[in-house]
Length: 379
Image (tube, rainbow, N blue to C red; front, side, top):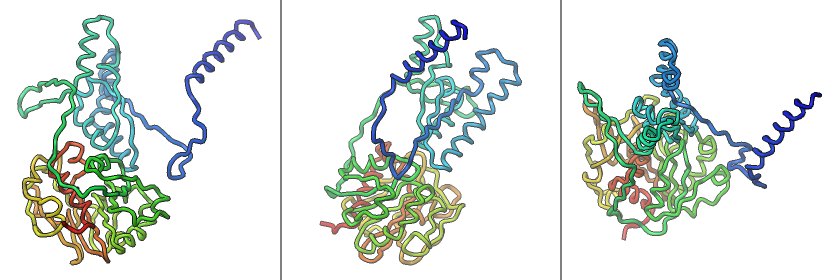
């Protein structure tokens, strides 16, 4: 073997050893729920930006545009169908070109990671500073109908909001995470002690110690263990527990997983207008009166949507609490249903708590506090 080749091999080994030295092995690592490995899914969302930088011909640019207009949406849908949270690497310029797609990715719980303003670091100091400024600042696209688009830049700031809410102190809540949401953080902000329930907990844990058990968004679509051990949750309710099921798709089969019959169709209704009118149907029910008196004002300032996946029909054992509708839609009463089952309470709540709590919507916190307290006696 030639000396030059030996030296190249030695150099490569040196680089590999240096790279390996950067990582620290974690001994006795145990993945949750019996998993044996972790996989990180990432996607680079560049659309045609790199192709433009490389001055590629129009046909190649057209391929890039497909990624922005179609491809990214298909990826988001694919990840969501399988309950996968991914990291989307993108650049500031793409945020200007395709803001709706990136907002949708964030709403689905995906992480955004930055690749500068346009995937390059300018050589000119002034231009580099400008790119950094635009990349670090948050911005939103303002695009009035029939008017030329304009971009409004704003500083990246956090807003803090105080909420007037009464709570039952020291509640213990078990949470069955679905596709991923920030509801448990909202529960903790209400003073509850929150435990994320894994498969072993659902199978063998003593559930009677929880004041409430809540299943997260679309949990029945992605948690086979929830379906497997659902009978234990119904027994928990029958013995005096308080179970709240947040919005789910048709994988939640009421006739199989709820205490009484009902119908949740694949084409289930949703109410997308966040300011849709509300009618309070049962104003004297505990979930609307204690520890907070829920009024129409608690449904103001909601964001993005009212709710999704309302039941179509339900047994008379369920009590519908409120009704709402989009323009041109008949009233929908299947979004908040509560039933007494044995000694306890079972609630289906399809209104979008997973969107309201992260934005600090006061009424959503007050309603959530009431749901958690449903198993307690008013004082």
